[in-house]
Image 1: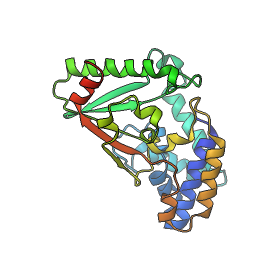
Image 2 (image 1 turned 60 degrees about the vertical axis):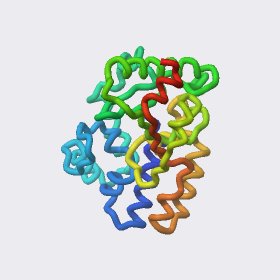
Image 3 (image 1 turned 120 degrees about the vertical axis):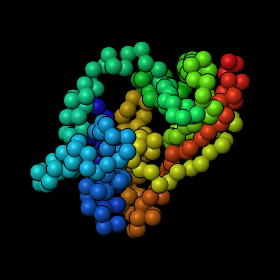
Image 4 (image 1 turned 180 degrees about the vertical axis):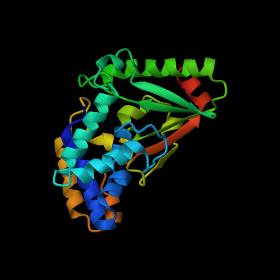
Length: 242
């Protein structure tokens, strides 16, 4: 379970966005946090009428006298339990890197499944991360001849420790996205490798939330924004010697 403080910074951001934009708090939570994804809503498209989201909104109404962060945290815990995500066997044997296929593209995903020490992107773990990527691209080459492009989207592409795992043709072909606040691709920067809150980093962010005077300024206060990257699949085959 992610720390309560992690949900709290998103709630604070959504509350300030509500004040500055005139959105209702439920619409602001929908637009400016990753709660929709965190609640394991099955719909791939963001849909305010999804029954799980509507249940959460109703919970907000029913507990109007309760701290919003507490409501969010409790509802997230409820969804975790319903999806059996507390079962650690779910993560056993899984790689930090995974992928998904859509059309002629492979999308790379990263999730730390190693814990805090020495850190999944540390010098000690470069070899392990690259081996995961080698295995992924070997599988793509043998099973997915229709794939011609590899794509990524994450705040992690701001970090040299992450970019060094990929060919430069991929990480330098980039586009910064400052309009999407509904994924871990932006909120993940507030968690360390043990999934604890980066307290000083988060406190500085909260201070900027409180100082923002309009919605445009509020949207610009993040240290890192998600970056879209892409490159031909052949670049990866050459880089990893496949």
